[in-house]
Image (tube, rainbow, N blue to C red; front, side):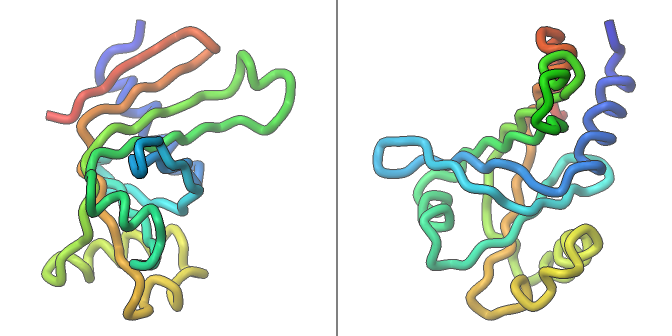
Length: 149
């Protein structure tokens, strides 16, 4: 069994090596999933993504800030059933305010420099997920939880 520091390290490594996640929001009585590019703070307490303010996901977030992200290391091979890792992120999402935007944007653009024009546009919102819990699944059945204090 992994100790808390080892779980933290495994989560941090997976977050660093992947660039995209499936975001689940709630709207119209059903979950709604979309692909987002994300970036995480070094302490993994916050994750950022960008979206246009006219999107369904943005509207869903304004109505219900509870979200989930799914990040995995699968490569679409049969071996993934035992080798891939899957990470579920649970947290609350909100738009980054003006005072925090510069720092959050630097974090986001460090991972996604090719999205600078998109995230700099006036109709683009930079969203912060304050993480409550990570659930990491390794080797198909090994489930590890890491709660943010």
